[in-house]
Picture 1 (cartoon, rainbow, N blue to C red):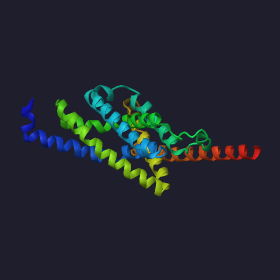
Picture 2: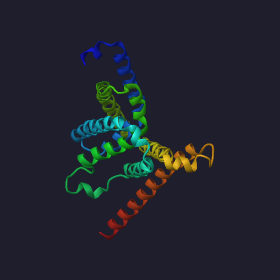
Picture 3: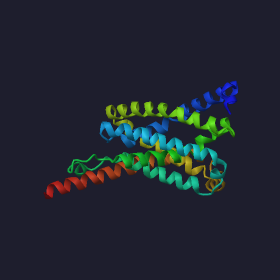
Picture 4: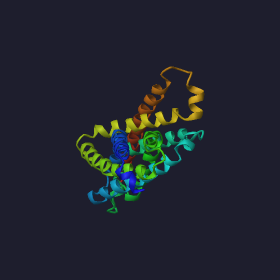
Length: 236
């Protein structure tokens, strides 16, 4: 087993896996940043690390059984719809009254769960590239994904700072997750077999429509919450 560490091909493949994860971690960093942005500084770091570590473990599992997963009808459709809902939730600010008991507006466990679920859905396609490089080498697969953890953590930390400084990025991030959710749903085996011939650009049309839908629904819920809060304040 130790012989593999002296094999030039092993290190080349490891480098390829790390690069693949760097290239594919942009949307993952965004969802981590959105989920953890409302946490206190101390819990935010744990949410980023815990969510990323849990997501990497799931990626390893997905990569091992990826062929079977991709052939299950409706799996990606359900996952895409779930990701759309997660995107909408991440756009909605926490209610002010959540601060009354002194607790953070978002729980550490909730943020970690959101990160893991969203990353798992978005990674269904991403892990194909990693699996193709790793082939049957489990050690190579695990090393490549574990090494990618600090890359995603650093990227998420930078993204949180940007979200704080430029709030418009929150909306753009939600739209991106909506696009990914639509992309995941429309590439489901069953869906693709029924809609592929409808329009040559159906893939982009669905993804773009989902991005817009997430922003509109998120905006509408925010307006409703603001109006309701104003009514409560007037009554009090």
